Image (tube, rainbow, N blue to C red; front, side, top):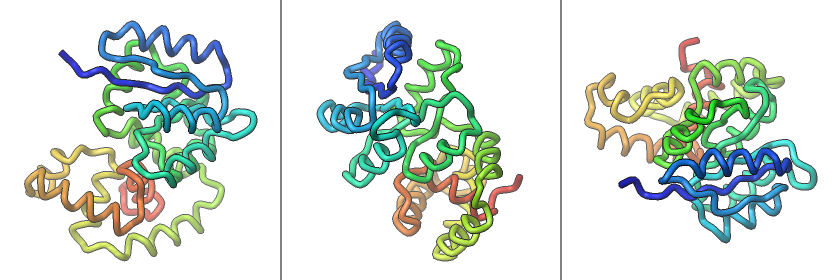
Length: 219
């Protein structure tokens, strides 16, 4: 039997929250433990409930989703936050990923896929396709300055760490990176942990976006 995945939904539209609660509640192993309709209430709900996954809208009155993600990241021990968006090329999505979000889902995601992707996020994996990451970075309004800043940060890494970072940028799991580099999965896990510290990245997704910013992932 799967462990229950506890979810907090943050969206200013009650209809969206109700839809997500209904869809996710149809799975035996997922429970929506709280809803919030603005960023401030979302931060409070996450701190109170300590969920396994947060589904976060970005454009909300009062505190928006990006500010909420930044608040959670500063507090430490942030659960995976998956951004909910209408358009996958939304500039706000890129900012959210750089702030520490673990990935994003478009609101038109089919219900059966949504359930599976919430499980994936709860396991600590990125909910973001490499193609979508490339589109988002290409759409960035400050791509040149972002690339310069990213390259300065990546220069801190050893050659092997940079190879692992490139794998994260492609959305690869530790197992697939290990196979590519002829390393053990445990060794790759160690590289990822040290690399996140060096780069001051909150999670694998943030590091993957940095890899795209720095231009070390093939288009």
